Structures are given as C-alpha cells and as structure tokens.
Length: 321
Image (cartoon, rainbow, N blue to C red; front, side, top):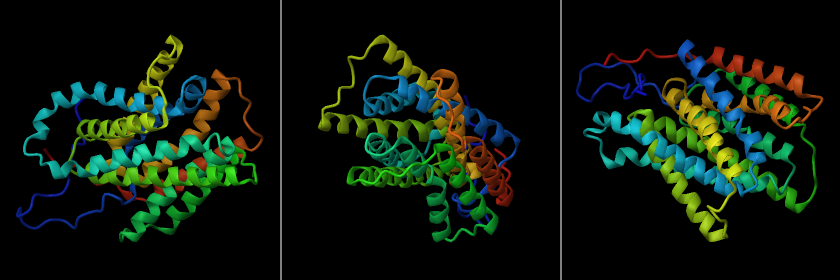
C-alpha cells in the first residue's frame, strides 16, 4: 500500500515565496477520501473492546502483541516505500518515538483503570481525548471556531450518555478515574506527536517506528510486573490476531494515514465514534443490551462530530509530487 498523502506538505527552505504554513494541529474539514478511510477505521477500532473482553489473558499482553504484530505486518510496506527514507535524518524520527511512548503510556494508564473503577466511568473519561488535543492546539496558537468547541462538548457528553456513567465513591475508584483521564491525555499526546511526525514521514514509516516503540515499552512493563507474554490458548491467539487486524491495522493505521490531512482533533473524534460502534458490536458478539441512554447518546455524538467537521478549515490540497 503506497501512501498517496505522503508528506511533507510544506515547501523546501529557500524555494522562494511560500504560503503561510498551517499547523499540523489545526482542525481540517475531511474530504470524501478521508471520510471513507475514517469510517473503515472506526469500524475496525469498534471491534477492539468486545474482542478484548473475550480474551482470557492480560490486557498488557494484548496491547503488546497488537503493536508488535502491527509493526511487523507493516514492514513489507515500508520496504516497498524505502525510497521515501532517502535523506531521512534520525532526529526526524523523534516525534514517532514520542508518539510510541505516549501510546504505551495510554495503554499502561487506561487498561488498569478498567478494573479499578466502573467500565462506564473509565470509558467516558478516556473519550475526552479530542478535548485535550483541541486545548493543546489552542495553546500552540491554533484558532478553533466556537462551533468546534460546542461540537467537542456535545460529542463527549454523548459518549458519556452511551457509557451510562455511574458514580462509585471510593479511593480505588477515584484512582481508576484518574488513570482513565491520564490515559485520555496520553492518547492526545500520541495523536499530537503523530501529527508532527506525519509532516515528514509516510504512514508506514511513522507507524512502524511508533508501534515498535510502544511494543518495547509494554514488553518492559510486562517484565517488571510479571505479566507473561506467551503461553496462551489457541483461541486467545486467534482473538489477538483479530484485534491486530481490526483495531491496529484497519483502525489505528488508517487513522494515522489521514492524520496529516485532517488533524489530531478530528482523528480523536473519529476514535470517539468507537463508543457507539463497540456498543453495536457487543450487542452482536456478546449479546450485551445497550443502556437506556444509548440512542440519544449516539445522536449527540454524531451531531457533535458534524459540528466540528463543519467548523474546520477546508482540507488543503496536497502538493504535486
């Protein structure tokens, strides 16, 4: 798979007069191609939660294998695009490594929260990711229209309604809530660093470095806490393979493909659509009945996403190759 949206978009230094540079953290209105890719990605990540719930092994082991296998499976694509690595300097990979560290921190913080607080509260808090990416963009000087802020608030509220948040008062639950919120902030850092990296790197180059970094950190974490990374049943291995294909390759990787053209806040909102998507998948695979507020929550999420997309800048046209 070649990368038709391969960066860089910005003109070479000394190339003469150039248009004002656009921040990689700006909110852009996706075109038809981006919408299609994000739709496939949302379907992919929607299988993550229900499939993970069916695996008997540790969440940490699942996170390790989906990232390690994702990096290995993308290596042939990277080798096919190796011409894009010509002249690449090691410092240009720093943002990819930082994104991998944030992704590992996201898994390490959020996954334990699921057993410390209610799944509903953890899910609702971790879906605040686009709020953090938008705040970071605003602090960096990116102007976000009021319509974008209203859309973000409405979408996050809708996700909370779908999750059916219930409040559990205890020190353990409070710590779990804090970890889920930290997981959301780290996921935001993953997307922001990824947007920086995608200014210069193709999707395959960025994803291989990012996923590999994440896998190494998670392997070290598993070693420290004594979590085994092998010895699973055949059923668990097949489920981990399905999670890798659905959530990592068709989910994260396709979102990373459009990251450089729509911005991290829009990608964060696309991931937020995983909440209603996972609800439907769980209904089919696990026969879990959705909560009473699922329908109005879904409507709020869709309207919120639509407001953000309409409030974004038109997507800049790619420079001719």
